[in-house]
Length: 349
Image 1 (cartoon, rainbow, N blue to C red):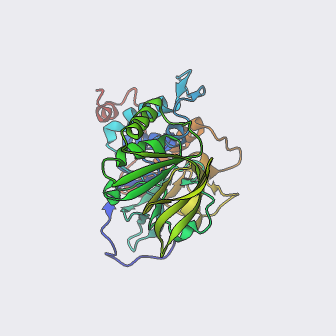
Image 2: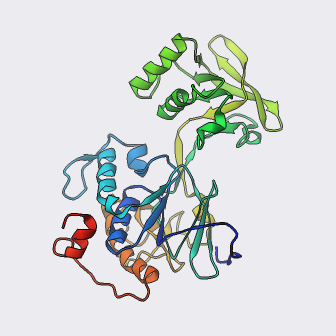
Image 3: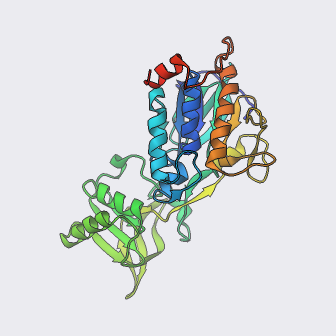
């Protein structure tokens, strides 16, 4: 992480702060940084903001957010997005923060797994428990096909135009992509181990209508193996109630859910404590100047893994981030209730 990169390796988007993670704490950090006139770009592996709240618990009630006796994960996400909207955050979704290196002029250069490059004097890691990564099916030899004809996410729909696709899974992701890719694909087969689905009822009804119209194949089975060569699928082997058989295809999209891992952050040279990032409790800065960690991914004595704690950490982090982003300016502490300039920024003056 400490090595300087040669100039002009890639064209980078410059901003004030790069936030890794668009969950509640990352979103509130946009607000706190915005009050101090700092612009943010956020990177998240999920396809929408909200982190765990929106992805895993959108309807789960939360009872310990100040001023909100009860709020669901999705409602909290929506309110935070509304709160930070005046500061026009830029989101880079469906991609993982992969490489982080210091540039010759002392800034941080972040590259994602799909080639997005961002530069800023400050990086804020607000990645919760780490990156959401897909659960891989236990199919022997699947690694040979990954990234060539086996995929765990859809980044660009056009990539799958005219393909003969097998989609595996029974949740929202599997059903959503079955419906979205059906008009583009040459043929789609949905494979699930039972004839019951965890997805939204409307999606299930639309899927069954496509099956009834002969536009989609549904197989109640499990994938037992893959056939092909040089990373290119030719068929998947299915094991169903009536035995084992091969289903011809050239692409497999497997949606078996997500799990949490620290991911590439572990390779950035930061001091770690049991897969968490130690920080001080004055600025929530890591062992590297200009890199901060807030929310569940950080550690310090007495740490409580609460959204409330992450909000507090974001506020203090923003004070120190200002000194990196605007080193020649004086930091003036103001209250939103009494500062006309802050109220103008929020559009409420």
